[in-house]
Length: 239
Image (cartoon, rainbow, N blue to C red; front, side):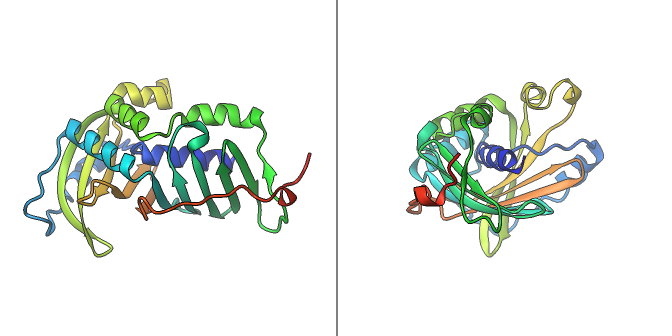
């Protein structure tokens, strides 16, 4: 279901979403494409632990963000506020094969398809396993997830992306985390992803590749005021 995919994808991206490189030759080729770029000469690259700590601190100070995701035949545009349980809020749209509009606030999730005059509130029996899979979206929990699941971090230099000088990191996920997420069939699979950070330690771009497909997410408007309201009761279809 597209609603489930969107929520899980947003959580995964913020928690440093995974890139599955099932072909070792592809991985080697990618590592040879690193660019040094023209960045700040005073920038000190992070190691694994300091990167995780810096990102967690930055997200905690800026707990809202806009995600624009291109997933091939699906494009998503969401604004999100991170937190625990009912603190999480998000609103946005999906364009593509299954266009959809969604609002999540105060622990309630609403959605409607194009042409629908009213929203439908997603039932708790659906939300239970969905929210359990997403987990705690607070900055503190995301830092703990990164620390547990990240095997290695490599600084790949600075690059200019959309006119902004960013710092690229290539990250490899621990084999245990890969198997936990993908099951026994993932044994021996090498999992990596790329992310680009600005000097404020906040992500601006994440690239995820898997099964020959590519998902590109752009993050902006970190820390912006975000006022997400539930639909008016008159605009929600009653059971």
